[in-house]
Length: 358
Image 1 (spheres, rainbow, N blue to C red):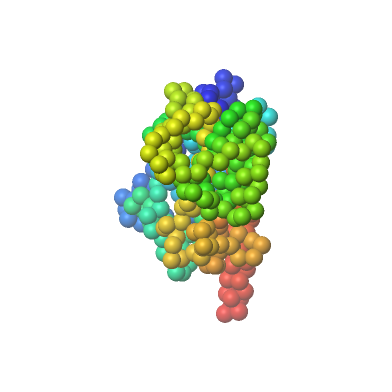
Image 2: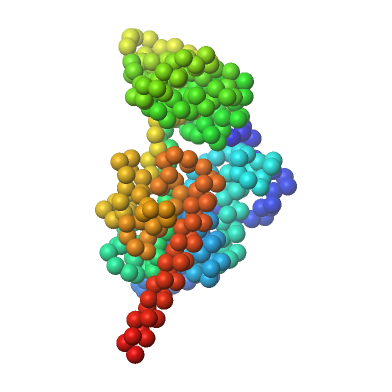
């Protein structure tokens, strides 16, 4: 993360549009428009839902396997990296890269190999039989295999000031952005294990970490509470709420409210990490795909297969532990290979059945 959100002058994407908001007027768009007009469904070997690192990596691999994937990427595609400024921990970019720029490269590479990317949200699905059916933007898509890579989104406090300073001192990922706060005072808001883990991690960089929680006690495990309470670089602020993030171009302080007594106070910090949880984007698949107690989709065994044969899962939608672009991309690769092999198995089974009938 960085205060400088401008694209570097020597960008490898010079002249390339990075927008995920509207499809380009090319043959892909024209063909989809024709299908919509005619009312005919659009068929594909593989449909990928989601256009973050997992979805677009899956698109690259399935396209290179000549599976001609369709990516239903969302009205606002690109995943969480589209709201991330500086990315310094993605391999291959020693000088860092802007999040939207990185996703533009992912998209360009997927399209180079023939993936069709549709900027629409999936409204509903029918996974009861194959071909699977998905509806997005008024069009029905049919797929022999589906890869679900819809990701997860961080939960935010809902403050206008928080939104304004997101990427300029406000973050929801300590692993991603902690490095930028070396020798600075920062705050973490949250009361569970995730908040305490992030606070402990951030002590490797920050001069002081202030943990803010609205209740008198934390919800996290006893051992995590003990570690945070005993750490010399962590200060706990219980019975406090964040009312406003102060600063014009970057975080300068927090205006805190008190839940145990009247009044407010000001806490001078240079960064705020929001650690109140994540929400996997699974609403459209509820009732079809199995999920854990946190709402993340489940996979079967060591593969990316879901509980429905022919449907695969990749990225943050099933990962509540790592939530990194590089791990999501890796899962997109795994899901693509799993889908390709499964389709080959189905084709072989079909040939055997045909030969048996003959």
